[in-house]
Length: 286
Image 1: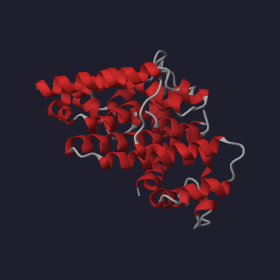
Image 2: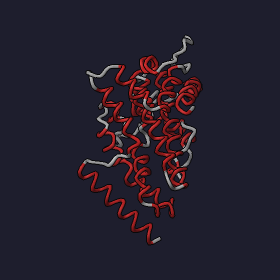
Image 3: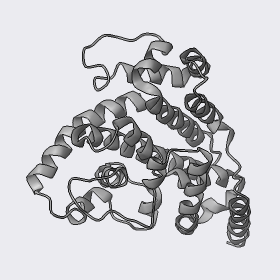
Image 4: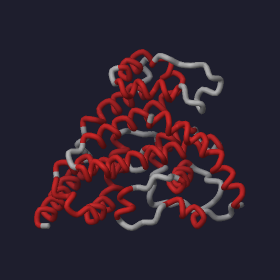
């Protein structure tokens, strides 16, 4: 226990110092994701340049082609077999999301600790599930661009994911996962804000994570923030840190978190969205 106390204190002090400076130390696995993001944001970049970065990462390249051939993005069944055409079909917003998903999956696999590797894997699956729901709900409700919704959903656990990635330097933390979950709950929001700022994301995405203005319960959700929150409630995969803290499985909260909605209308939307969500999950996880 003494080691736990010492390491959690040191870890907290390190994160606090980095937040004060606005300079978080990023794991190397996120380098490709950041490179793609910067290229996608530059008007001087060409599709060839972006595709070449994707081609250098075999797992990402395979998933880009698979996503381009998913039913939701390929309704007419014309197959795409090369990365450049696939990038053009899925668009840069979806590419950024997929690049982050692949980087996060690699982070989960890199953990030396079995317990933290399982937690990281659970966080990754939860993020992908929320992203898939956000995309599918956006397609159904036409509130926001589906690709923007998917990327925002993928960011749902970014603060927690970052902290777990850094926790590999503090092996004693896995000796008390319940207390580590409390540590994560304390630091995840300020870390998430800083990570999102480092990624220089558009205001619409930053606003989706304005923790001071929670979802009010109106149906249908009127903003990206509301839609991502509903997606997090619909996700079948639990957030492992919420489970450790005894927070009930989120889908059970759907009935109590929406007001003014006709139950049949909400169920119908969720059922239609569930089909598209499966296509996105297959593309990202396959």
